[in-house]
Image (cartoon, rainbow, N blue to C red; front, side):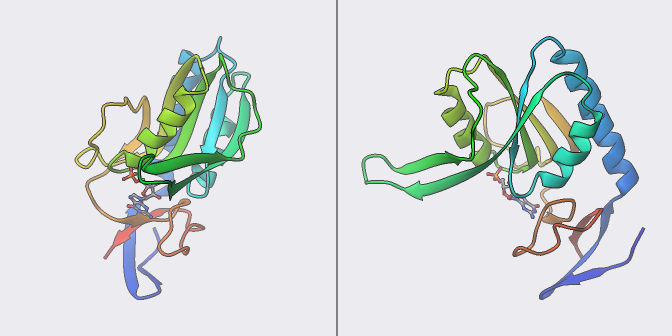
Length: 178
Ligand code: 5GP
């Protein structure tokens, strides 16, 4: 495995290998292939971070499916409405469908909870969540994360789609602050 990488003002060290990632991807895909084979699921790939995981995962998904790429934008509405979450890029009609949210990492779960709430209003049949990484010690929400590649402690990681200030997404492996 490669050595330390420097990104802007910080140094990162190797943390999760390509081999570990591909095993995790295979495990997640196997479970999805088994659970959702009759569902014709719609995969909703949450950009930007999950592009690399999604590409690897969906090569291993062998059941019929559709794939859409979305972004989640949060902004402050009026005082009474609080934070408004908007979905950008959803072109599929997902009502009545089984939806699989594809995430890079689930940390506190705040982002995921907002996305789930938006999707629930679209009368989907069921919502499943597949994530490359998860920080269980940080996760505070009720919603079940169905398919998790690798559980990690509360460390800041980059690579495999995940960035530090926009950089490092192209690294093949996961790195952690050195
Ligand atoms: P949550 O809402 O679950 O707390 O955080 C989810 C989002 O925070 C992720 O989609 C990701 O953008 C960012 N995030 C959380 N942990 C990390 C991390 O360790 N590294 C990077 N690069 N982003 C993270």
